[in-house]
Amino acid sequence: MIHDFLIIGGGIAGVSTGAELSRLGSVLLLEAEDALAYHASGRSAALFEAHYGHPVTIELNKASHAFHMTANGGVLSPRGLMFVASATQADSFAQDVALMHLDEISPDDARAMVPILNPSHLAMAAYHDAAWDIDTDRLLQNYVRAIRDNQGEIRNGAKVTGITRASGLWQVTATGQTHEARVLVNAAGAWADHIAALAGVHPLGLKPLRRSMARMPAPGGHDVRRWPMVIGSGESWYAKPDAGAWLVSPAEEDPAEPHDAWADDLVLAEGIARYQPFVTEEVTRITATWAGLRTFAPDRCLVLGPAPDAPDFVWVAGQGGYGFQTAPAAARLVGDLLSGRTPELAPDTVARLGPARFA
Image (cartoon, rainbow, N blue to C red; front, side, top):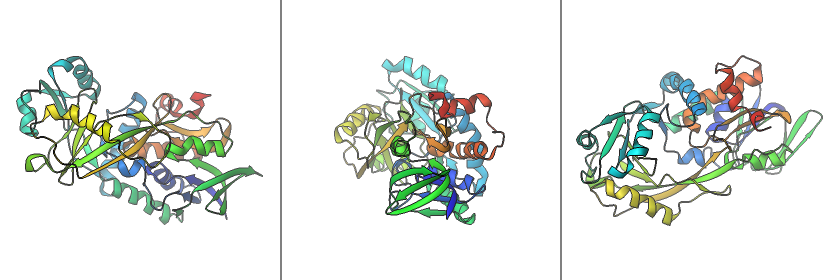
């Protein structure tokens, strides 16, 4: 069978794009692992905050909000966002407040929401409630259902090992089988440049950056379910409720080669050391750790659209930490570009997302 679209990568980028393209033609999605969303998508902090990210990413966030809120019953639930700072962090705190459109609140008001905050260290706080948890599994399954409802096919455990092009078709070899398609979509996350090289397409210089996470029991036995996400000024660490437990991340961005990432114990310890003075409850036990790779283009914007040197090779890459919250608008843009529809996003935004910007 010759497919209209063959998508490499089964994270949120590939699955959302597959759902959009399945309305335009036949879709085959190949995922190297035995399950979808195994790498970065399965290790996300899963927060929707429209003002988080590069200005172009923010445009995608805003264009995705209504979908997240309403489509298939919606996938957002209230969380809230708080930034905290010590007396020595006034400059970075002012930048955080301006960039994230936060309202400054008193340390006492911050402690009323998060009672473990340390009054002897906390000097400044800011908050807003326009931040939501994303039900990532529900969102993924909604997209998977759309692909299958439109007769698309998803194959797990299908690692791509070879790509050629002949007679106007892509031939993609995965786990001993060769598949043909008219359009090849590269949604391979940290491996996206590798896939481009296999296809003879110019790589973009994508950089995978590791981010680690530690899960621990709810501090002091508190019920943390209604607490906001808390971020140290300058994004020096963050903490967030998770199914009754408490997550703490060093918020690091350490360069890494594409691989099945794991947390670095020293980096976690350094991050917890930055977090610890802000709270009264000492970190004594960690129940789980993990890491994911946030992959960025050189300008930290997503890369969406046909490659200048191969118009039937389509980039859906460079999501960084914004894959879930941008997915609806990013997938819709790719569908617009491949169908010939006028994109809903502004022309300048479309240009700043396109891979031609690196030509």
